[in-house]
Image (tube, rainbow, N blue to C red; front, top):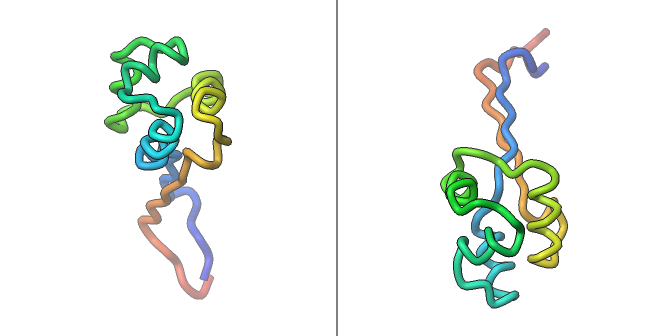
Length: 88
């Protein structure tokens, strides 16, 4: 079985459940407080929390510094293979 990568649609997402866990360990009560701590506008933070955007590298690094974690702790990847071709 081969993967047809031209038809795949991999996406990197922020695991908000893990963000919540790390926020709780740091006693950060809201996304607005987190946004202030990392120097991000609250509307940008809202877009990240609802999954409309993914933080850029700098924002992710700041988020990890404040939350005391690594990027791999907060990110995951999804794949959407529209067709798996067998026998090729």
